[in-house]
Image 1: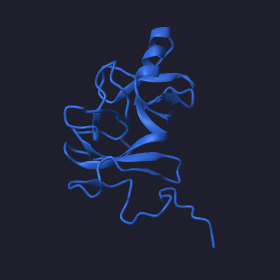
Image 2: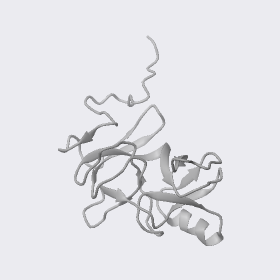
Image 3: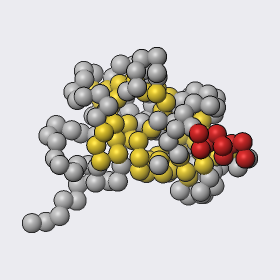
Length: 161
């Protein structure tokens, strides 16, 4: 029997799960987390606002622990990244919570730097100051840049841990 090389297959196979779907009606239990063969852990969540592809996300606690929306302030705790396009308010999607992902960044980043939210919606930037490192450590999921980059498109490869 050949090895499964589909990067979106999951441990015990769960039929009907496609991590690239955006659903207008809830299809799975909110908060369901699954590990995929691409090395990511994803959570099925509801968008608490319109979400763009590669947005860094925070939990919208006013709506519930499984309602995610773009980070918007420097002290927002990162809860994941949106890997798909076309997510409107109240849609459902699989947010990446662990593993590698592309994310919006403000400018040049350095490999190994901790990335933290800034005032621009869904966007992270690297930090080197001690206060920034403390913020990164306390801000939910750790986000670390994997490569030195000056992204022209404002997107960089990171590790969520």
